[in-house]
Amino acid sequence: MSLPHAILTALVEKPSSGLELTRRFDRSIGYFWSATHQQIYRELGKLEADGLIRALPGQQPARGQKKSYEVLPAGRAELARWAAAAQDPKPLRDTMLLRLRAAAVVGTTGIEKDLRRHLELHERQLAEYEEIEKRDFPPERDSTEDRLRHLVLRAGIDLETFWTQWLRHALAEFAGLPGDERK
Image (cartoon, rainbow, N blue to C red; front, side, top):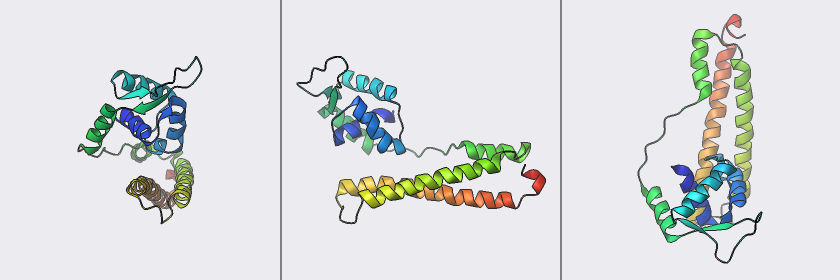
């Protein structure tokens, strides 16, 4: 149920068209909650039908023109209700961890190479997050809104830091395995 809330959040921040939302998801929200443009457009239709958003007044887009949306009071109330509700953390589901468990019983062929690839990907993502932090969150940006957005980014930085450290540890373990175990 979180995609509608991700869309409501983005629209409260700035009224947007479906295309603009897709682009914003690609640049920010998508780092922690991804969605395709088809999913976004489908949810916009549902949110509008449920009376939570509306097309901006005075816009009657012709075929091919984009329609921009804004959040209605009922949408803001739903977003506030959802944000305030307690939710349990989701258990970790990671394919690489499952593959390592399987490798313990069927052999490690291909795993070490993929661990190195994952390390490269996480290092790249970490560098991107750190660049965003440097660019978008200088010390003088201290509003509540900025601090909470920075907190979300810090979660990404900390998670990528965890994964890069863990992957280095896993690769060190692989280096200590007998040669015939590491094909």
